Length: 160
Image 1 (cartoon, rainbow, N blue to C red):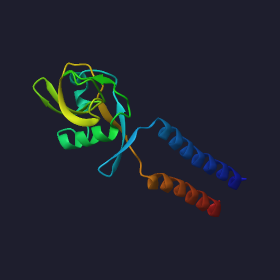
Image 2 (image 1 turned 120 degrees about the vertical axis):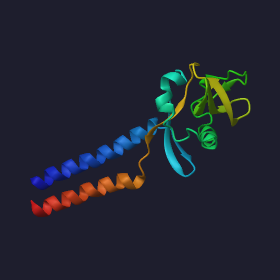
Image 3 (image 1 turned 30 degrees about the horizontal axis):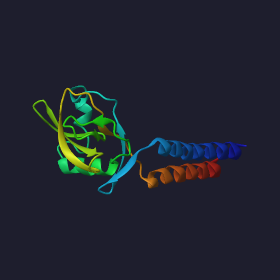
Image 4 (image 1 turned 30 degrees about the vertical axis):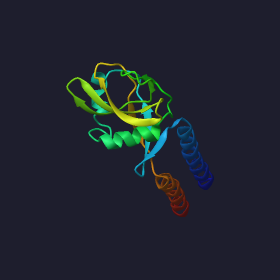
């Protein structure tokens, strides 16, 4: 009886891992930048001033070329949620990478040119900034969890 219960629990755990990874991937926006995968999302429109702690913790903060790389990878995946303050037309999410006085330096993908460029926006302008939502687990981590559950099950069967 113990073996049947353990098999059911292990099966449910494995199914849960598989289902949750499928659901997560359906809603995920995963991008590979310089060999690392990132789950990128867009914050609800707000000012840099209100979101500075989050924006200053991003991997591209103080790294303009990395911000450009992110903007090029994300491109129009989220559409064009922002309008350029310089008249360049619709733009993708803003990848803030520096603050100088009341101006935020950023990388952004521009609809008209279909390329990422650097720009600036006032820190009190309400806009959609990009952030890394979560770390993306390596496939080996998920496989390791599944194998670990199987080993524990096998050990319990031998001991129980």
